[in-house]
Length: 133
Figure 1 (tube, helix red, strand yellow):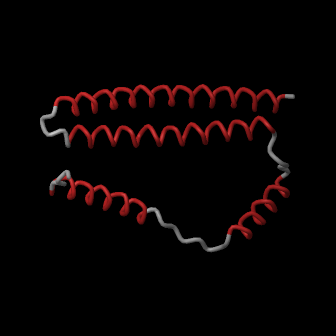
Figure 2 (tube, helix red, strand yellow):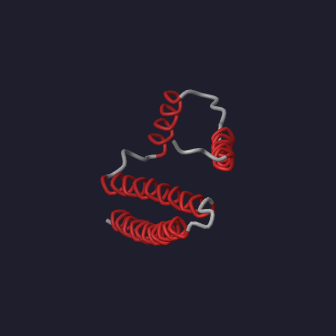
Figure 3 (cartoon, helix red, strand yellow):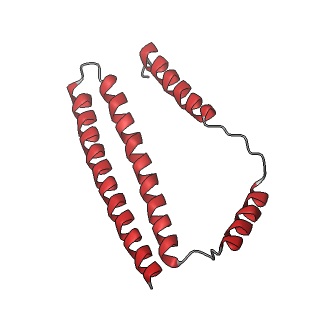
């Protein structure tokens, strides 16, 4: 059986504490429930002259959401690579694996940011073309 070192346990508890703190720090107070909020937004939208969103906007929002989720996964991989590198303890194989994961994750983040920028640009072009017509 493998023996778990105190350093690994402390590192895991520290990371867990950080994630719990981040989760608790983001708590918000809601003064109304979602049903009332949607009624209010529908009322404001209808009185302002806005109707339902068009297909271009919906597709753009879906693409942006997916890219945001993929970006979050890439950031998690960067954190994982950093933790792997810090816990390598002189093991060159682990350090090289961490460097490889880190390089690939950074390349992934760059690709995701480019895709996000291109999508944002194209969506704005389509929305401006629709508003001109």
